[in-house]
Image (cartoon, rainbow, N blue to C red; front, top):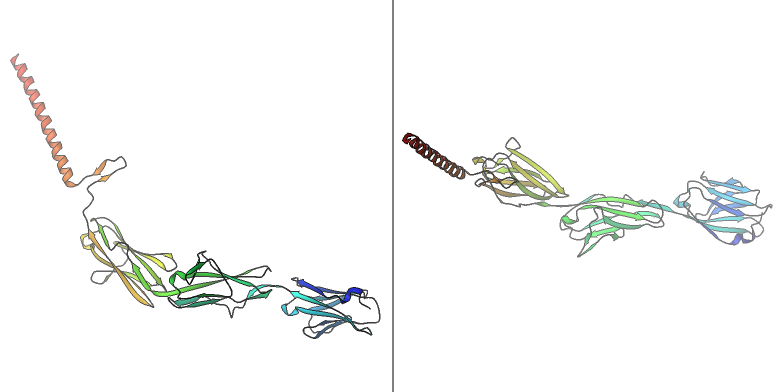
Amino acid sequence: MLPQRNSQQPWSRRLPSPKPKLPLRGKRGLTKVAWIHKNRYTLLTLQNRVITRSSRYKVSHNSHRTWWLHITNVQERDRGEYMCQINTVKMMKQVGYLEVVVPPYLDEELTSSDTDVREGTDVSLRCVAKGSPEPDVTWRREDGQEISIGKSKVTNVRGSYLNITKVSRLHMGAYLCIASNGVAPSLSKRILLGVSFTPMIWIPNQLVGAPIATDILLQCNLESHPRSVTYWIREGGIMVLTNVKYKIEVQPTVLYKVQLKLYIHNLEPEDYGSYTCVAKNSLGETEGTIRLYEIPPPSSIVNAQGEDIFHSKSEKLRNGHQQNSYKKHEEKVVEKKNFLKNSYLHAI
């Protein structure tokens, strides 16, 4: 069997398929055909026999004119040059290259997991993706915000490493490393970056006034990571507990921010004074104080029609006095009229 005229021309096949088939055309004769993996110097088949121990290889032919090498469950190591050799007096061969494309995959041992660092230190996140062709790696924030790198802000960073110097709490969040090489599917890995710092409290209103017999809300804003243990205390170190009088809420806002709320119901004279919110985590402790003082009740409440619904006691007394005066004046006028009428009748 002799190869065809163009059999000396090299061929290349780029195969994502799990079952490639490499052909060779020849003419019937008393020759033998062998398939060889050149890169591994491995004899795969000889005529109809499979020489290699791997069961993934198979050879077939069409009346000894066209020979095919079949490879099932293609793997990366199958990439390389394959030679079909014919043992004529003058050896003839044909060489081709099998390119195996592989979608991106992660080297988990070399890729960062969720990371927690101290504020002010440097951090390096690593994402090692492999595949064929070699994947491109891009970093971006999951929430879509820009990434602060030095003095600049960028929407994404290319490369296997994401390096941040002097990390701050603003860098905290989830980052996505996305690997792609043109072979579907692309790969995405989510890495959560935590930045640890001592708790910090700031208070919107340090002085709060409220009338007696009303309800009031006291609030502290807390920034903390890791999460803090929080509580409220009154003057004298008395801890405030949730009951009929008090209601305590801890309301998260973003990753490291929470609102500490203390509701006080039906204020009484003894409820006025200082209230302190306290926060503790493994790195430190902080507190903030709010002073609650009494203010007089509003003098009036106006309804939707612009009419006073309630009045102060002085206004009520004043209005009551005026009404009594009007009533007495009217009574005197009536008495005078009756007197004149009676006098007139008596004269007749």
